[in-house]
Length: 93
Image (cartoon, rainbow, N blue to C red; front, side, top):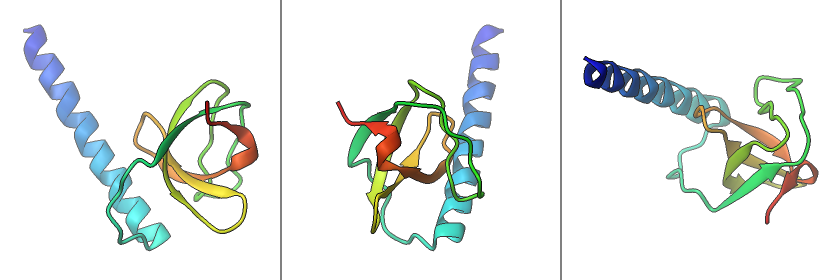
């Protein structure tokens, strides 16, 4: 029984990740392949002011997907959400 619950949970998570990726591609007009170029840890908690900003909590691990102009990078969190994060809020060690 627990095996089926685990599979259902993975299927739901996978579906949510696909939905987030689709939203990201439409919102950011991102047509490149999504590759993780680096990982970073959030140094402080920051709430999002816009839908395109990724809210982060201190200590959260993030995948850096792309570098943009200025001091902003596109990141993905463990839930599969994408958004802009200021470089000054990240630790790349």
